[in-house]
Amino acid sequence: MAEFEIPRSHPRYVSLKLRERLVKGFEDGLVVPQGLIAHGRGEAFDYLLGEKTHEFALKAIEAAVAGLIYYKPRSIISVNGNMAALAPDLLVQLSEALEIPLEVNLFYRTEERVRRIEEHLRAYGAKRVLGSQCRRARLPGLESPRGIVCVDGIYSANFVLVGIEDGDRTEALRKAGKVVAAVDLNPFSRTAQMADITIVDELTRALKEALKMAERLLNTPRSELKEILESYDNRKVLASAFKAILDRLTDAANRGVVIEP
Ligand code: ATP
Ligand code: MG
Image (cartoon, rainbow, N blue to C red; front, side):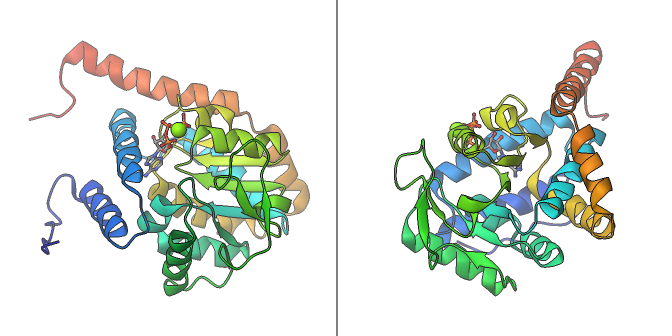
């Protein structure tokens, strides 16, 4: 692809940069074409949310990071092609900061793509990555190869963070008895509805906040982590996400404009 620098002053700079990363990920064999479509769906919801991290997302991020730490060493960060293309640096930083492994786990699984994503994450400094070399097991409820996971990773984990994930897979993780936190811009999606902790936010924004949260929560006593998890109410968080969209739409419907000329 011809090199084209997006000027920083472009009003959609951040969004265009993310698209560029996905297209590059597609060209490098990390991302599947279906991943490009999934990204477009996410973008549409990000417009409705005003492309910012809301208070309800911060609440969910806090609970997700608390869970990742609380359930150690049985917690894991599941990584797919879109996640690896969009936020390799942030995923690696979070994995290193929390000392929690990343597991490459793909909907459209090929061993070649698993290897490529693993290498990509290692190139960004990942030290704890599971995927191609691990002992394998199958998650019940998903036909092979969608159900393949690592025995010492997702299979035996009690807490799993997923992002940009399909609803069936999230449901299979829940049915396997795991606590699931999911980053998903669409509060209507099956993943958003199925997860125990739903972070309705864009992946890169959410991971940046998760890193800040990690710094704070790593020094928090276990009893407080437990308290964060026990007092967390995902129905309330999802309701707030719908309300944020509703409020924005109501305002737009009343005034007919969302961008002041
Ligand atoms: P579901 O299977 O959960 O009902 P779906 O079929 O609409 O959802 P999938 O392609 O299976 O969608 O999953 C991708 C999900 O990730 C979508 O809900 C989409 O909105 C969301 N998404 C896409 N890009 C991002 C992103 N950058 N950050 C957060 N969420 C995203
Ligand atoms: Mg789906």
